[in-house]
Length: 330
Image (cartoon, rainbow, N blue to C red):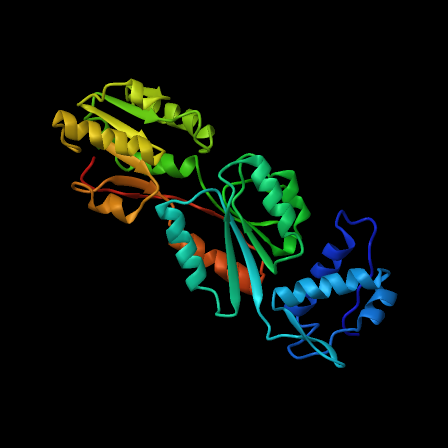
C-alpha cells in the first residue's frame, strides 16, 4: 500500500510532529525505502488532511536532518537509510561513559546517537523528551526516579522506548534494563559479612541528595541487624571525623574522595585500619591504593543489551543483579 498518513486530532502532537514521526517511522520500518520517491507536497496535503505549508515545512526539516533530499522538477527522495537514537542519561560519570561506549560500539554504523543529560532536573527532562518526539527511531532513557516513570515518557511510542538503570514501568508495554537496588546489593554484602564483622561499626553514607533508591536504607538496616553489626546512617560525611576501625559504604563519588583524602591526611590505611566499599565500579577504583572494593552493575553489559534492543526492537524486561568486586580496601 506504500506510505500513508492521516492527521489525528486526538494525538497530543502538532501536525508537523505527527508527519515527521510518520515519515521517519515509515523509513525505519522499510515502508519507504532508500531512493524511493516521496509523495508530492500536493498529494500528501490532500491525503493527510494538512496544509501544503505543513508538508513543505516537514520536508524541509527532514532535508536538514539529511533524511530526505530533493531534485528540481523530480521531487523528494529518501536518502540512504540511517537510524537516529536518543540516549538520555542522568549525568556524566566514568561508569556512564562505560555504558555509552559499549552501547555505541554494539550499534551498526548507520545508527547515529544523540547523547543528552537531564541532571535529575524535571524541567530539563520534560523539555528534552518533548523536543525529541517524532525525531528519533529509538529512545533510551534513564528516568529521574526509581519508583515511577515521569509522565512525559508516556508520550514516546512504547515500542521504541527502553528505560535504563532505574524506573518502574507499569504493565508490560515498555522495555527496561534496570538495576536491582535492594536484594542484589545485600547479597553482595553477605559475601563479605565476615570481613565486615572485623570492624567496630559499619556506616552507610547516604546523602539526602542522592538519587539512589531510599529503599536500600531499610535493606541495609535489616542486614546489619541480622548479622549483629553495629551500624549508622550518615547523611553528611563532611561533618564527621573519619574513624579508624570502622567500615564505610559510599554511594556518591565525592564521599569516596572525601574518605580517601581523610585517610591520607590521618595516615589511615584502607583495608586494615578502615574498611571501604563503594557503589559503581570505574577503572580508577581498581588502581587507587590496593584497589577499592565495589558493588556494581556491569555497565558494559547494560550498554550492549541496550544496543541489541535498539537494533532488534524485541521487547526486553531485565533486572541486572550487581556483583561484588573484592579489592584491598576491605
